[in-house]
Length: 156
Figure (cartoon, helix red, strand yellow):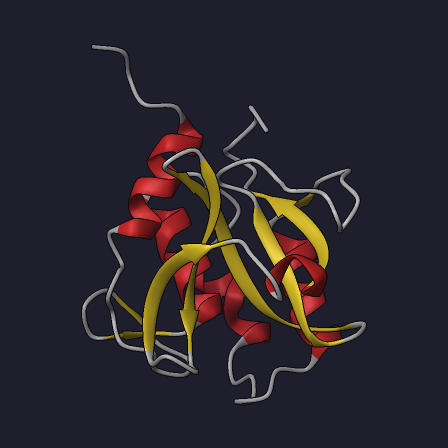
């Protein structure tokens, strides 16, 4: 049996957080997590986030319930790598979508996957109150501001 790719490990790790309750500024599987915590937790679990340490994360702690897009952008640039994809493209599995609730105000993160041959997104969704996976369908594609990848997932 072939060894799972880093992208496959990451998607499996993200799915293993379903249905962890949404809890702002948390990162404990089965207890509580927000969208940032899911990206960190799944990345650490899949061993594809080699640049992340508690010390490196320290300047980003204490973010508000309504994230500051500039602050969130700095954290993403520190730990993830940009994908050279148009925001209207559909990124491959294990990519991270930086999503805006309002035009040009990114404030949410989701991990891309595929289920039944269709693109899906896995994210800690406050509106539903837990980590979910659902189709990458309207309105989500129109809300993507940029695409990112984990440093340990070189195949995308």
